Length: 358
Image (tube, rainbow, N blue to C red; front, side, top):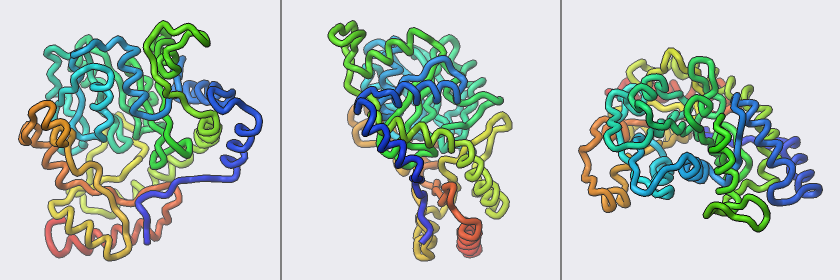
């Protein structure tokens, strides 16, 4: 059996966790602050604020950036639902722009800023979105980068998350780096955003019993931060292995199945996604050969029951995303995946393709 992904856990991570449990405060201990410092330095920003999840990071960042009740924020229908849910949680209204058929990313030419406060581009599957074109389309609106799948990815030589007004990351267990539990991070060069985010994640407090803001209890646990610090030192090496695996896939699979990569982008391949007109049959064929695959994401956000009921979507509004969702399939990719297993996956995909349009 070839799994879709396999999380990493080493003795060094175990030792860091035990040390934090034995020597630090369980909540907001030293490892939390050091993890924030390490992550900001890695991304090239002045500030990093840890939180309890990627969803919390997006929501808190939006509130810290001053999003007001009912304000519209443009984002993509091709993402995990947390991207647009965060806008609702922050009091705003998510609106969508369709995607590019060859990348799965938001199409900058379709961004309509009428009445919108800003844009949340998603670096989907670990591949950077076209940030220059998105910034131009946004006019003076804010850019909040959803980098929850893109730890270490670069756009024009800069780490994603550091290019917009703020960037958000998730450390969920399937990500390129984790904290062995839920966790998230907000990065920014804006001191005001960082200060508000730090208060919001900690009950809105400025000091122990002084609360200038109505906040949340969405802190990152100390033991998770300790593990995250270790994983951060391993991230570049893991990403390089992912790129090697992706290179093998791209050299052995049919070109018409592959997504395009931007010339200005350095992806980190959180997922390796292909497209097939017979996606479900291909998935079953690979499953019969002991190969686990995934579908990210089978239902575009606007077609989720909760969004259809709340916003009146009926399907057909974003045809590229809707077709894309019917065709995408995620192949196994993780740093420890063996080359022979990659070759086997490619052999099976090509074998299926001989019987029809893959």
